[in-house]
Image (cartoon, rainbow, N blue to C red; front, top):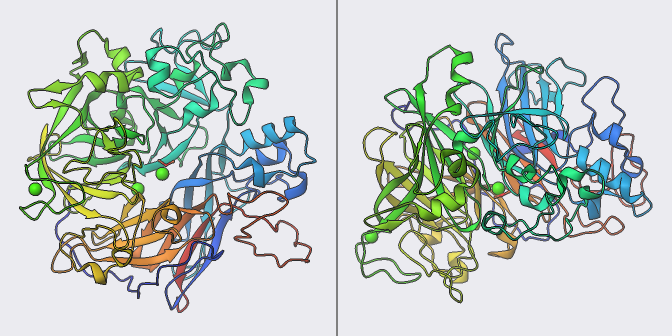
Length: 602
Ligand code: FEO
Ligand code: CA
Ligand code: CA
Ligand code: CA
């Protein structure tokens, strides 16, 4: 539950200037340096071969760290005195055009690419708390989760006719996880990861209401896995439900490499950015999750059972049963106009959590519980109260409750279609048409975290004030903030400051993506300070703020994604000079990596 108060962090730094989007470097504050923890292709098992950019095989990739790391966390191994930890990272997707030489057969490219998806768990070690981490090849907890890893579906949709296939007639055991984006770490030490853009891996009839609502079409997919396995085409007999088996929140136990990971149907099925958990005063576990689609919704899950301190086995069942709600926001300023501060000086109002599933029963007319959970977007479209329906948001990415205050932060990353054509226009909670730079919503639940009502306000409306953008930083002077655009992932430091990583700033404010600290209370509430910038074409993911150790970790995703294999535009993180033969295990090509940023005097 919530801790009290804010304090002074040990992680002091002077904000870096905004960095040009063409710079192929990691930029960190004065007095700090960086190095990789683990890179795409690093071997993680004893008999795994070294990374060889020009000769990758599926068998090698299955034993190496995957591509495009997004959510990551580092959890200390109990009893290790801070010298060993376990790192989790997911691998959202692949950038095939910069990964594979043209001479590699297409079938091999598909197989290596598939093996670069999924999840990784890798042990880390260090000499002491003042030295950087190294990953440990062959450590006992190391594990790759691949397309043939079996996940157990939990909750009401498990065993339903909507998820059965010819290979899983029980509808309970699903192979693989796809499109894993953000995530969260639970109070009981497991990892949650959101299956986001799963639709891009399936060919489908594309004609049903649910196919249309989930973006499933009859087009060939970008990676063409449907050529290798019939399950990636739901037009095939026996596989009509295969796409219903993706779009869930996954739970993984990084401390048990033999455990069966779960997919939790109780949290609904949509393009889950991620999920983050807080324990309410009543002991129920509350999870928040955004559906990252333009004009889609924000959700909240409340567990049926209560958290039991120290009872990990029990706590790992909490996400299997509970209530599911979708958010409705109502502004309090009738004078509200697009891109303008309301007359009451705040973007704010009240809200309601509209029920989708309550006490094991469907709250949506004409839909069973199983249907509500598998076709959650269709159910949320029907949710309503006297004030109307659920609120269409500007792409809710990470949604994270502060353990200091219980307030919940929602990163709405952007929505270029807001107010365009017949699309819904700006309102107080999504206050800009053609919202290029995004905004952050702050939610205060009414009383206990399980409440069905809340108040809300905007913490910030992002952009670059110096370029004339309409921005808002809770009243903090706009000439004293780092410009920020397209907020994506959120994290908190040990004293309750919010940290925001961005994805899309190059096409927003025309600057490199990065990581930003935001003060939430006191006279400096709304102050944004940029901590780092990532290399060319990369987005900043993770992040992990170990401010007590004056160390920050980020996952650098899709560096150099707009290049080609023959003409790379990023050389992060090895930066092998042109005309030089890379040392074994290195490459003159971009490699998505988890990096650590630490003080040079550590
Ligand atoms: Fe994969 Fe919503 O970012
Ligand atoms: Ca207002
Ligand atoms: Ca994201
Ligand atoms: Ca987060």
